[in-house]
Image 1: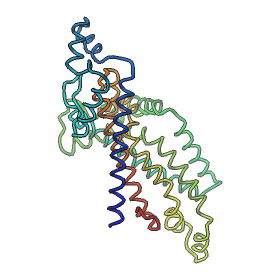
Image 2: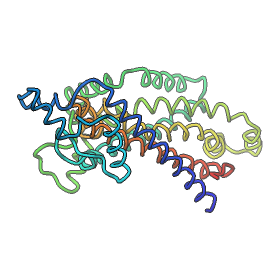
Image 3: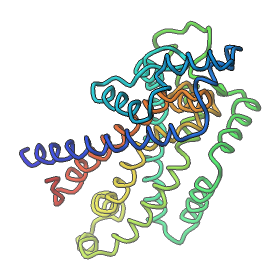
Length: 325
């Protein structure tokens, strides 16, 4: 326990400096992008005269020097304040917390689906290397990896929503249905199927290929030969001995991708009109809503760091030879 506490303490200290660098770099990059929030808001209000634009800049602090804006923003983040949305006149935290649960549901289901299916398919391919099942899984993985994710989503909508009518094509739940309890959960699950499968297919292909390669690398090692000499079945050898050692590269990649899934769901949320933070980020870019965009960057960065720390801890569980300290 002392080693784990020491490890967590060091990682948290490093994480603070990493987050500080991320906050500063993101702020400078966003401010360097073309576009003026005041001009966007004034244009939408139908009063784009120079005096009104200057009033908006002064109201939101956009008329101050860049270093002053950066100092104010960093001080706010240090106290847990991500600022207010220019466009929606609400705290950024409120907007993110409203959109975060749908994103976590979508990315969580896609991650579990991709990891489970990828490991099983990769293991099956490795156990039948050179056979038709190995070739079929390899072709499926390559197609899933190479096909544009938005095209897969549109094709699934055309097939299962338009042609067959089995699943809803967009949204988080049926608008105006008034479902509650179990009925609402079922309704959300039906809306979740297509976006989760679309997002999970790409990562499933990666995990399947990585699992297959890792198993093929491990299966001829001495400890595996010893297990075969003892008369153990091939299935038991693969799942009890080979897979436990071959799974480490998969865990590494999965830990990295778990954090990136949240930020990488923008395209899926746009195609399926899913009300998550990916869609919120897309709208913030169009509206030049800097504070919302920076808040989303900060939250996703925290999640990436947290998942990386959890991955390191999981290493010691899967392989006791690895010490987190």
